[in-house]
Length: 204
Ligand SMILES: NC(=O)c1ccc[n+]([C@@H]2O[C@H](COP(=O)([O-])OP(=O)(O)OC[C@H]3O[C@@H](n4cnc5c(N)ncnc54)[C@H](OP(=O)(O)O)[C@@H]3O)[C@@H](O)[C@H]2O)c1
Image 1 (cartoon, rainbow, N blue to C red):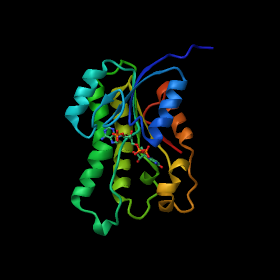
Image 2: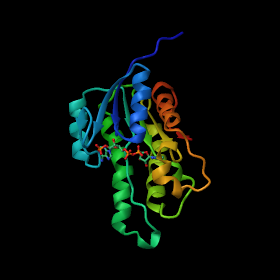
Image 3: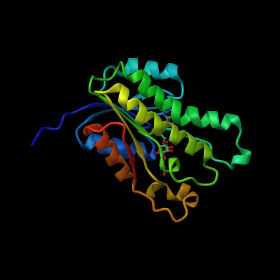
Image 4: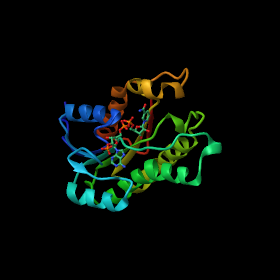
């Protein structure tokens, strides 16, 4: 059997519900994981600030993969949304991850990869979710488009429904929609990092 290539991986959002599971899955495969967050992690940076992303890449040095498990958007009825709310969603979930890719192209290894996080609201809307749906859809379209320009580097997105572990917090927003264990979402990151596909949105 072919030996597994051990990769140096930058994981943004490593202390969250998803990030913790992604960290466990990637470290469990033997990869070297460098964790990033605003308040915790090996490297402390806010990825909504493009200047901080530049510093982050300078500090991290060359990595083989960048995986993102961070991103936030406001939730409220469309009649209560403001233009600033949509901008906050774009900055908090879309531009932050787009910048990780745009600035990372010249910094990660030649055949390196990016794995971004979106979510079920890109395809299954819920009330109060217009900003989240907009941001998730933007990231998924970006992934498909960026993939054809960055080869042999790769970029994919993981697009999960609500996590079983998050049902206490978000369950009422997803009536009748089966949750997914966060460990399954973490396996989609393993698939993206170790596999050969690009431009994919792994929906689960
Ligand atoms: N929870 C769910 O059921 C679910 C389902 C589908 C998709 N998702 C998506 O998955 C992603 C993670 O969700 P989660 O529930 O795991 O969130 P979470 O528990 O709140 O964790 C977020 C993580 O990201 C870091 N982070 C947040 N903003 C950051 C920033 N600007 N710069 C750097 N690090 C930042 C946080 O650490 P610091 O606070 O230290 O920065 C934390 O480690 C989100 O995009 C969410 O929309 C979640």
